Image: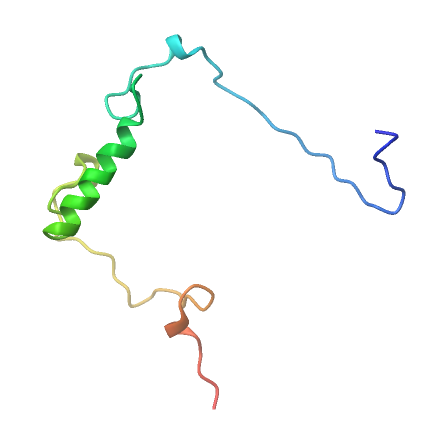
Length: 93
């Protein structure tokens, strides 16, 4: 620390917490995520994206997305997204 300390620089204490560290053999097996031969989840999602791109959106979807698509969020009281969408920037004249 004496070699890298600079008196004119302000430092902030921080830390990193590592939790749930287990051996590879001790991991809970997940049908979609764990595969000894490669990234099964990434390949699965790529395949779903390709099928949905070829046919139409939501041709294939995960069960966790649900099957009832009649509900949709009301957008009438949505906050403006000035910082994320160019079309929502206010126009000044």
